[in-house]
Picture: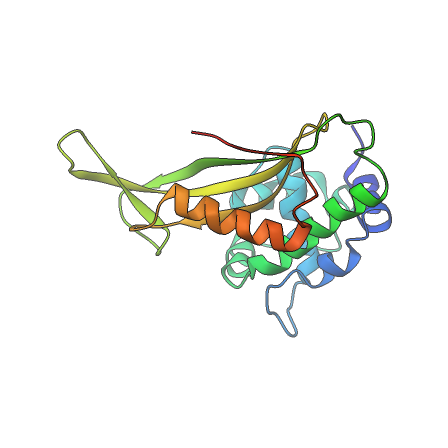
Length: 203
C-alpha cells in the first residue's frame, strides 16, 4: 500500500487534481487552515477507514503531519466548519475530469463493455431531523422512529474497478427514482451519451 505522501504525489501529478485540492469549493477566502490540508486529511481518513471527524483528528495526532502528507494539524471542529460550506459541484467536476482523463489515457481500452450503474444507498441515523436531507424512518405502524439520509450513486463499472463519481441526495417528499433521473441527466450532459454502452440501476 502506498504511503499517504506518495498517494498525494499521484493525485497531484498523475490525476491533475492540484487545483481541486487547493480550491475544493469550501468558499474560504483567507482560512487559518488551508482547504488542501482539511480535504487531504479527509481523503486519507477514507483510505484508512477512518470517517469520523474526531477519528481523523486523532489519526493526524497519532501519525504526525509529515507522515500523512499534511502541513499542519487541526481540531475536528475545523472539519465540521469546512464541510458546512462545501459546494458539491466542485467535487463533481473534479471527479468527472478524472474519469475523462482515464478514458483519454485508454484506461478502459481492454474492457469489453463500459457501463454506468445507478444505485440507491444510505447512511447515518439520528433521533431528530437535522437538515432538509433527513428522511424519516417508520415502523410497521408508520410511526417515525428516527431519521437517516439517502442518495443515489452513479459509478463507472465494467472496467475491473468500480469508479463512483457522483451522488444525488433526496429528502422527504422526493424519491430514489426521481433522484436517479436527475443524476443520469446530469451525467449525460457531462460525459456524453457515448461514454458507456450499458446503463444499469439497482433496486
